[in-house]
Length: 382
Image 1 (tube, rainbow, N blue to C red):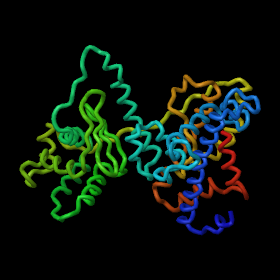
Image 2 (image 1 turned 120 degrees about the vertical axis):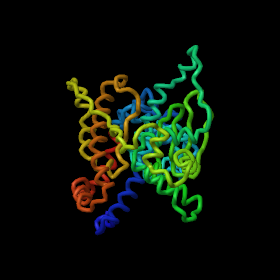
Image 3 (image 1 turned 60 degrees about the horizontal axis):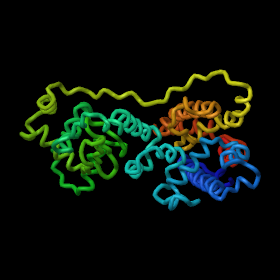
Image 4 (image 1 turned 135 degrees about the horizontal axis):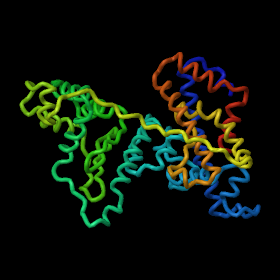
């Protein structure tokens, strides 16, 4: 604690916070491991508990949903899937991002950059969820066979992607392809990624596939029965862009090149509405249920600051709220409110405004002596 009290710069605060948050994420791995060990060895029977969930609830006030989430985190991110130690490749993500990433397919989870935000991960999850809803396995039971994709995935991606990306992105690509400076392929890929996927992690929905833009390449992920997966380099994307829109070279203007392909004028991009979870309307609950949630409500006041630093509060599973027990519905409501407030704080941190960040830190971290350690203990009881 003494070394924290001697911090005198914003950079020092950021370094210390990341270190502490990383410790908490690793703590979740260990909590999951201990719960699994209790479950597998049936230690809970020593005190007459029916199962590990009853033990966790009665002893630490950890609900069934949270206990499952802790164990899932350990399954997915620990060494060999059953260890108190986190895999090296997942260090530095923080607990909330690791929790969000659980619902991602492994091939997507593997390319999530450490600096991705919870919001960006959620947007990718939303695209995947929309795809699953529209192209579910049940479609294969229909008499009509799914329509297959024909031709080049790269050409299809260029045509569909730049149709809706807007004037700014189109003009940046046009400017880049006519640069004469020789560059290594790694530099080329990085520069093009900065134009089409500056966050280094983005999912674009096409007619027959999803395109996953990552730090390394673009992965084409066809919908059920609609073609084979394929990996595309950013350099390939740029070459195909040039061939599609500028077959006659530099003499074609941006607006003419766009209109020739799409038969419509080049306009500014229409921004997609930010994906946010609407808060649930709270209903009157029996007195007993309210008493059960007194501890979580106390933690609710402290989690927003932590989550927004950006990786903190535990997030609930994706199961429909209507199917949860009443107690867990209320925990879900609290969590969603925390996440929404957290997104505001995350925006402050990403803005880089020193004054706003310092005000935020003063507000969220001005605890009495021992407050930080006490908070880390309390979060487990939620």
